[in-house]
Length: 372
Image 1 (cartoon, rainbow, N blue to C red):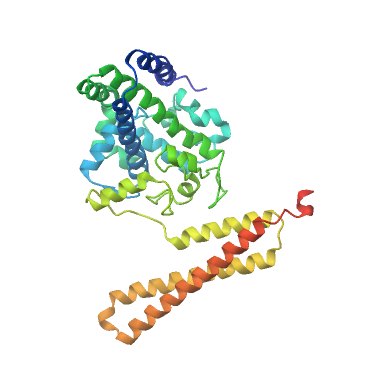
Image 2: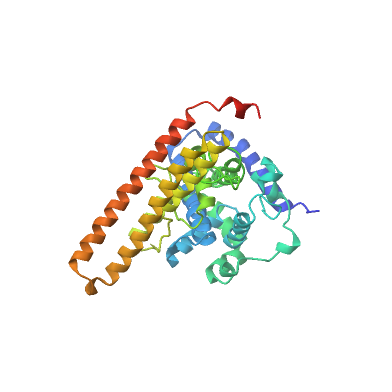
């Protein structure tokens, strides 16, 4: 049986208690200052981005390459989140993806909402996982140094920096309470809700082979991490919010980093792969609801065939571009025209599929299915 990790347990319970006690007392005695709000929001933002863009998408999933400057930023401010070292955090997260919803998943939702939220953190890890870290992370000199000196770095960045900034503003205690304690508590539970709420409530537009779900509310609270069903299905993608209108500040932060030359080789899955996942998932849902299968399969096959034709033609197009000097202008324009036609066919077949799914979802479930 696992033993209680008393250090972590006390920290996770005493920090919310301290926030509940000291925030009202400070506001009563010192009053409200907008500078405190900006201090809290700024430190929360850089801390959260260091976890989402750094710990998560960069170090855990290697969805892009970061410069040394960007990596140092992540490791320093990420430590201030008090969510463990990048080495421990990344290793646990990879275990989660590899063994999701099983006993080997460190925050397995099958063991209950509370366990996935923070219960797992209150227990010491099993002996077989002690010092068993992801090799690439352990061999990263900066990551290992942060792990080795994690506690002093976390204290300095998590509490020392807010107090220092607060002192320059003439309110060191305000910096400690709002930039330190309250920020840490809010950051903790926003991250924890990804492990609990995003495996319990929300939509599964890409796959129901795992418990992960998309939640717009959690995307807002966690800088884009709430599109969790997409992330579990396409974890190599540097985006979680794949649509332009999806709220994903982490994606935008990485894109700005790329514009500044600090982030390179941003990885993303193709639109065709995403469409294929949604088509297969929609077809499965409609089939389970008891709707007629023949038309469903016909439209699904049409979309997937158009997708496959587009993929093959795109490969031919890329190969032709590489060998352009060896080919005629006529062949060049012919391939270009064919590619445009395939794109139109794919868009049309996908539009027909979406219209069909929308219509079918508006129809009540057949009585025969309801009686099962």
